[in-house]
Amino acid sequence: MSPGRGSGKWADPGFPKRGWVCEDVTDVSCSDNGCGCCRETCEMCEYMEIRYVHHMIHPDHGLALDAGCVCASRLELNRNAAEARERELKNAASRRRNWLSRRWRVSTRGHHFLNTDGMNIVVYARASGWGGRIIERHSNNPRVVYSKRIYETRDAAKLAAFNTMILLKERWGL
Image (cartoon, rainbow, N blue to C red):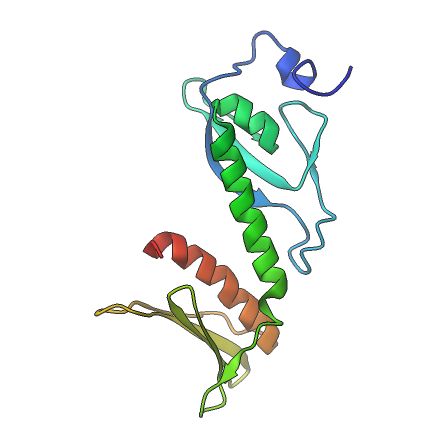
């Protein structure tokens, strides 16, 4: 059968096709290098190979499935929302690829740091590896987050700081 509305669960008359909500969206590409080679199959059309997975739930039926952008937009009747979620994730993936090649400054203590996205991000050597901290800038009462893990390399600590920055931007509303 050809892909699209007539394939997979779209062809099942008993499967709900409206009333879905997107709970989250994730990039399933290889986390080490972001090469984009890893894919999953959309569980709705059961055809498209997808990198950006929209985790959909149906509150009335207690169902969950992982869908691509096109199927997610049809399930929730909101193409703009699905495209915006995917675009945000693509932008973050692009930023992550370029993160290590950014011009990191070095403090007088020898710590590598960046001031970006309303945060001061610092990576520093620890006794048995690398750690870091993120401070909210431009606040009368700045919030601070320290890495709990110790990373083997400075680059690994920088990438962990990037992932934390993305989470904190959402949590702190920056």
